[in-house]
Image 1 (cartoon, each protein chain N blue to C red):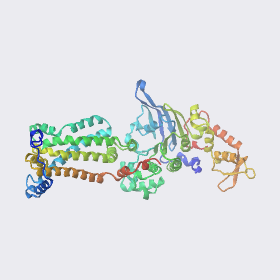
Image 2: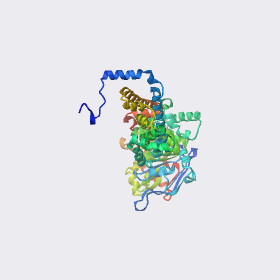
Image 3: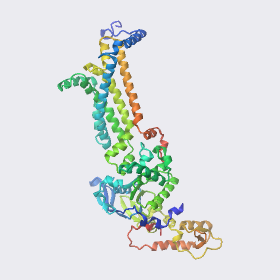
Image 4: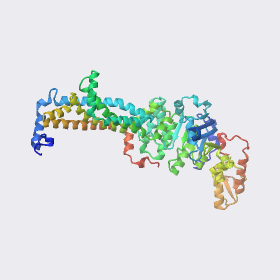
Length: 358
Length: 254
């Protein structure tokens, strides 16, 4: 399960993403009302998302992250600023045509109760006028893709499924027309933690496989760090506090606000993002009788092992079980410093998709 | 007092139940009551024609209005209040008012003045139910539909109407029953229908005729209700029926 979280960057790079598009917000604001009673939903946000990126918008409730998401598919029109998808200013496009090319998943799923699961999944293809045979094949494919048995669920109605199953159908429905961009508004917020973890892992796999660009809203910083190749932290009043890969967000929060938001255990969270495969190990096996860990494990696992076994070092083994080095408390500290040093201070806050793992 | 009746008029004689039942059966069994312009089939046919036409006119006016208001969410309270005036107006008064209008327009006696009384009766339940049904659809459903790129017409046709169907049809059922029952009034403006038996029965003190008319009106109203219940079963999507039947534990997040 952990391998899922700490996969090598290459599987999530833009290089093998045929479908992803870039998204750019330029000085986007949304104000409601005017004069003294004006309410600022989103305050002058600029955000650049590379093709194939998984950008998580995170922040407390009412900070404008959902509003930002809905401006990208024009369910809400910005008061000022521009939004570009694949270089096109979306205000010049037909809103309905635009939405048909963007996958949209909401927390409450919004499956149509009067339609079977197959009909629900076929919504956008039908709007696009696909022929019925193509729709039928696509529905089967999608249901399998999200881990449902088409033979079992196809003819069921939404009320006959569990919450987790319904959310999978919601994802399948959003993916139906192979959108190069997916907007997801707390999609896994209403399911229990175990199902949520599984849905997250499966969605990461789908993202690696399909390579679309994703904008994902959550208020859960752990979910943001687990899923995002970049994380955009919003603060109250609709401001963007920081946009950076998770590892950088944790290592160098741009402000006290971000530091508080990511939590006082941010070092521990950072450790979980660093794979043993990516750190400089001590040469040779650890001391006699030292505990061992696979190189696909992360620094957090290593620290945990060191603390629980009271050993001085952990032997790291490759896939074949042969020792490739050892890691001690000192090496863990060095690895954290290395990662922090690898970012020039003046680097733009939004980075490429590979920024997730260092 | 008891011998002269209320206000000194002779009240209807309380008939012996057995004699009365025999009289009613005899009236029904009389072949003369099954043929001609005053026969049961003709009167039932007239009653149905008036009712179906009035319901169709009500639907033609109320459905578009209710759907438009419910879809946009604007002006609903105003429209419902105006529609409810139709409920408050006495149908008898409407028929009386309609007479000179219908004559003026050259529409004559009978049918059209009756429509003038029946249609306002059919409008309120259909407009109100349609509006309320559309407004009470889960907003997430609407947002998901719009977010996937449904145009307003797609949204109405593919989502709002099917989901709202049970409540809309319940409104149509109310309208139908009210119209069938009130179509009886058509008789007083020479529009025929089963009201004829009731009006004539009262005038001629022919209680068997009056009774048969009243029972037939009641049966037609029940028939309309049943027919629309059947229609509802046929058109309401299975998933909605599942949803209506399923307890909340099914829809709660798991």
